[in-house]
Image (tube, rainbow, N blue to C red; front, side, top):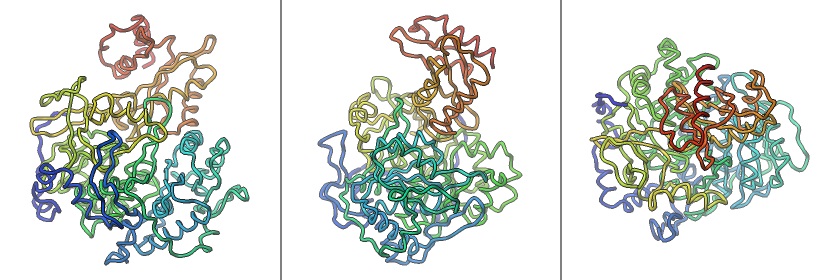
Length: 639
């Protein structure tokens, strides 16, 4: 990560930037809570707050205590009542190239009707709704409709398997499931309605399924449980009054992989979350009224929720939603879309950029990317060479890059340049956002000097922070607050250089970051050991040039079971079935035993050393040193 290159903001960018000096940093440093109160003034409130932050029950912090507002009102109504009424809110590009543009007024009408349909189906304030949909406008409508009536939504990535969907529905105790008849990916049909149907068979909570007609294919509909959206929408009022929500009312749950086999239901509440994403979107992406903003994420991930839906729409921005993939029908699909719609701000993952690098610049050169003025990176640390390629070939050496660090748990961007004033160092996320306080500490929680790697912690509450883990406060406290009392533990390693810039070093816990998607090692191991021939499994993430990390599994088989190539493929397919294609192991190695400590803990660190070709770290706590030697020999033989 060391390099001597520093890129100051281009003069033409700085002249037009929203932030031209360090005033925001100085205001936040002088009075952090007053700074966030000032930022909250940018939203519309039914009732202003009585207190900015209540820390009396830490770590269960409460923001904007006593305030009342509604998220959909802030994302829609207030724009409809302004000059933005007929401004484009959503530009949708389907995989087949068809497209539709919805103005703020049109989106407002559709969300009102969607909310009214949900109410007609019996959904009330506080009820839980699962959304299992591809990247289509109706998915955004469903989210905003939930916020309008006060229902708590949980979006499940449409690429997840039936089993993964079931786990999330069951843990949430959802009342309504919203899905589509089917979707396509690279031209292939995905039976989402059928997947959803299978998922709820073992659940006793789902009362109804609301199905949006996307492809017009024939699907099985169970009378009294399954309803077509298009058949109900004509029977409801055109306006649905926005519910008055308390600042700390739950807004949504998003399930993220954890270090146990059970997904974590991360809970975000209404006011603090909206203030956080509204503010960070505005300043990190240097929001201008004429911008066309495109985040290539999916609404099944936190990036999609914070910076496709809530952050941009609260600001009155125009967003692009794309249903497809960057390589279908050809490898220039992203550049085609940027040229087609005049995208000005492009936010994507280092994994994607690495892939574009491999494909070469010929695909890029086919298109006019001159509309771009700002680039963004999210999902995992970006390597300097990847940063430089993005800067040179996509930004054409004139677009600053905002390399952003944040998590599902943080809700909002925590570390990022402010593009009009921050000099950029390729590979560094640069500085904490104003009002965010970060420290790099050693194992005992002591601050480390410059350029020493350690644990990255957040030392004070921030508005968009998670409030708890659903139905599991003990896990919430243990995972985030116990290791370094008084500080939020991010699970990431980092170092701070002599200029105060932060360099993210990656995960320190048992979570694998594959193409920006966080996957639990325990969840993958759980899928593998469900095979009748598997005795034990250990999963690690090994470094991967394109995906940041690849899944590698070390598997011990039951006596008499042979480790054949057929079994290897069978196990990979089992993981796909249980979790989804994103979790498919790149490598599966059969081994007689797994390396364990004397207390019986599997030493995944040593397995990672082997997989990445490094010298083995400390083996003093190994129960049997010969085990790791045999695995190393076997691994090198198979490699």
